[in-house]
Image (cartoon, rainbow, N blue to C red; front, side):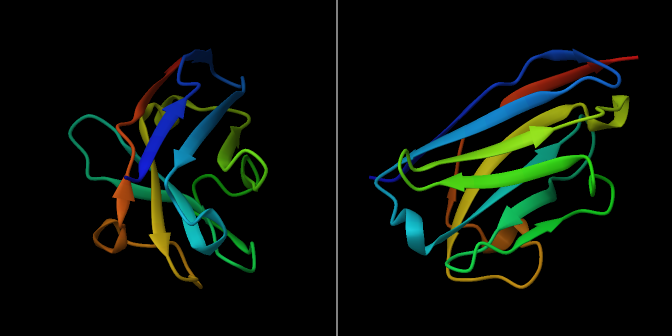
Length: 125
């Protein structure tokens, strides 16, 4: 059974930082593209970042480029999303996602094979 579990959601101040973790199990981690999506209240789920398998090329939404950084740790089969210079518009539930195969762009939610349950990020202005 594949399981993705997110950690690290919290309340942060504008301009602050948070680091989210996605702990995976049961996944062929080296073969999986790991992505982070987010969903704010009343909005659709949007792709934020992904790290493609197996080339580890990273992709970011324009809204987070230069502020967010994604990584994969093969030893712990964990993905991280470091979020710097947080803005109120970054507040959302953040979801970890896994999809097999490489990607050359941010994936659409319909392409995702496995989802985590999400972790809440709140940003105070």
